[in-house]
Image (cartoon, rainbow, N blue to C red; front, top):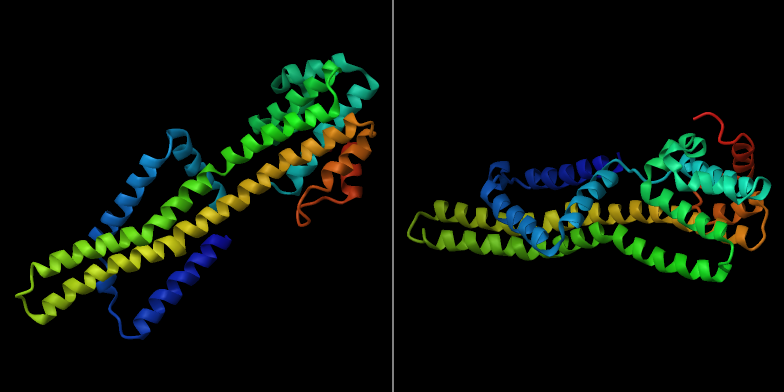
Length: 287
């Protein structure tokens, strides 16, 4: 919604101001300038990135436009899963936990939290480190070092769409100049025409510069920044799991360990202590 509102404000301000100055909308309609700039930018994007990154960028744009960052409900679900696994390990033993983490898709626990299960990367992260805890001969600081290494890799992967679109955003003003130069070349071929004709051709050429700058700072750049914000919040889920598990490994009771994870959540999405306690005591409640 924020993106849509902001985009409407941008277009209304820009076009409205242009018309108020006496400009003609028809002059801005230069479809081949769009073809030159958009096609060249897309081709550059294809050259610079792997197919996986291209596909992930599409997913990232969807996440950004729909604001699919984790909400309070998502954090409560993750804390509930962690609490149940820690509680089972404390009260029933390692074998019961191992049965869950070996096949999370078929476990009753993960099936109660379908959004957690749907996040395959996060589910694997949880299960992998619980598996190390089950083994029992790995020290907390060793697991923390391993987590840090994996989190660096995950963070780099999560932000590849941001880096890819940022590169395109930085290139668009220059590509706009390329389109403008091509337009000027076309205009120079009609140098013997009437001033009105020549002026229209030069005006059309300058639309390329306008489009390159506008698409860079008004469309692609903001989308890239929004992708970064959404992906950083998703990355925060792994930090939440990390801090909870480290606290548990260092001897904290499950309910106390959850507090270590809860404190890593951004303030506007962070559930209260009472909400976490109520949620975990009810084993996640009804979904």
